[in-house]
Amino acid sequence: MTTVPLTKFGAELLKEELHHLKTKERRLVIDAIAEARSHGDLSENAEYDAAKERQAFVEGRIAELEGKLGAAQIIDPTTLDAEGRVVFASTVNLEDLELGTKVTYQIVGLDEADLKLNKVSVTSPIARALIGKYAGDVVEVQAPSGPREYEILEVLYI
Image (cartoon, rainbow, N blue to C red; front, top):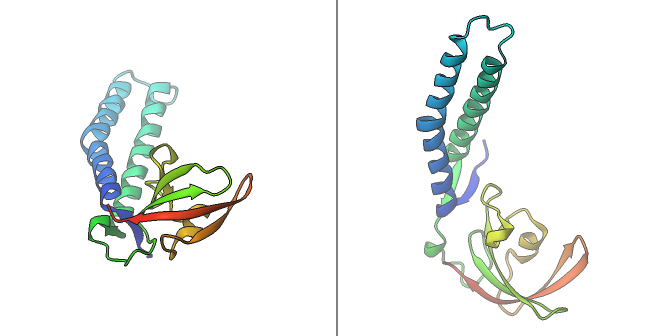
C-alpha cells in the first residue's frame, strides 16, 4: 500500500471525523435500525432500508478513514527544512504576473484540499508547477482559463 501524505492538521481532522463516526453516528444508526425493526415487516419498511443504507455508508467511511490514517505519512510543516524550496505542506505567497494580484496557498493532501481556505491539493496543476521551486522563481500554470504566470514571493513552513 502506498503512503498518503497528510499535514498534521489534516490528520487531526480525519481523526476527529473517525471518532465522530465511531462514537456518535454508529450509535444513531443502530438506534434507527432498532426503531425500524420494531415496526414489524422488514420487506416493505422504508425506514429500515434507509437505516441499513446509512449504516453501510458510515461503516464504509470508517474503513476508508482507518485505511488512510494507517497509511498516512504525517508532515508537520513547522518542522520542515527544505531550504526555501516549495514542498508538500509548505505555504507559498504568489503574485499573478498578468493581474498583479497576490494569493497564498498551502500545498496539502487530496483529502485536505479546500480552495476557500487556500489549501490546494498536491496533485493540482498549481501545486505540481510549484513543487521544487524557490522564492523568486516564475512558474507557468495550465489553468482552465489558459496558461497563467506566477512569481513565487515567499515560501513558508508554518
